[in-house]
Length: 490
Image 1 (tube, helix red, strand yellow):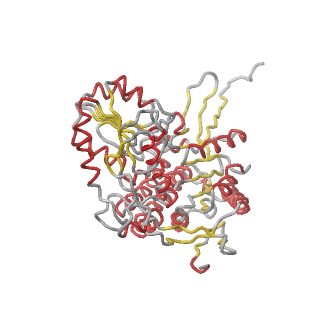
Image 2 (spheres, helix red, strand yellow; image 1 turned 60 degrees about the horizontal axis):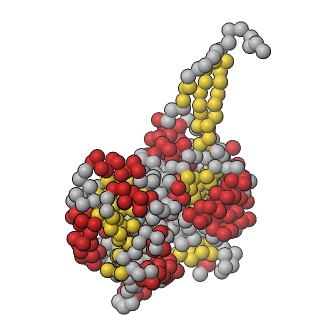
């Protein structure tokens, strides 16, 4: 077994597993087989990684390179990700269980992140501020130094690039802690970045568990900033530690996104949008439209069509080109999702579609759960209020704009929302009232690297993507240049 264990790199050294317990096994969610085994980092490795990162930050030329010189390496990383597109997508498919087409899209997104931030890097302009005396002044964006980037399992290569690309573009050294469920892509990203010319020590992947490696990174005195994507409760713990240390954080956390359908919507498009918005990625998406609000006047007609379309979702093995929805990431997570459906039933919910895991055929070997639609609950039910992170949609009727705005906002989350309506004045009114970081109108789950992304309320702090994504990894320094013709007076 040890010969197949993938090591991780600390500076010029490779860290291998010293014994069978010092590894992490990635399990293929489609059939329960071992997708890969990687050496597991420890808190002691964190100490060494932080020291290596600071040495690289201070003594390697990266942060002092001209922006166009840094950008050229980021462009090369983007190019190499494209070249290895299929092999990386296959590795992600084995690690996470995502369908093949979705895995290809994730690698394309990762490549796009490095390309975009290469362009931002070489075109970024510091601010010349208006003088108020005999001086001129400017505001500079400076790197923090060493940052920790902690990523989730649902979109590994994309999330890792989404953090590493802007942080590196800003001149930082990055310590990347991937999820223990999907540890392999981070190792490949580090390899590709180094082959593209990134100086040694600027990007390090530390496969490990959140309770030891993740906690060690967040609390380490050498880490100056933390970026985390994951669950809200873990985000609270990270924010608490960061608050005690007085370091900044970027937190992209959970969601329970409302998906609203008004009576004047194009129903065919709305049904398609709702289905893709919850069952895409098997519902394992922070922006999944998991709370469906349909205006009462069309509720019956809409739900009939929604049930038909949900039953037609093709659930299958990830490498089947016809598959639209693959397995959940693990048996534990599948059982958690099933538990929420049982809770919904106990609260009076009626399961219209799904509500079970396949127990025969090839799907029975993996962690599959069928697309599920539930009605009959109110906005106070646990299945409506708590993030399930699976292919479970809860449908509720509403009366009018005021009613749906009140229900949509009656949640601790505020990551995303969607609505379908032909009335653009209504769309503007409702979008402005919805408490969410992203609102989609007559579409859903669109994402653009140039557009900021993040949450309101308990869905997070800070913004990734776009120019905001680079600002997240910088601190501002103000410079004043004296232009006095006479000596300053007291």
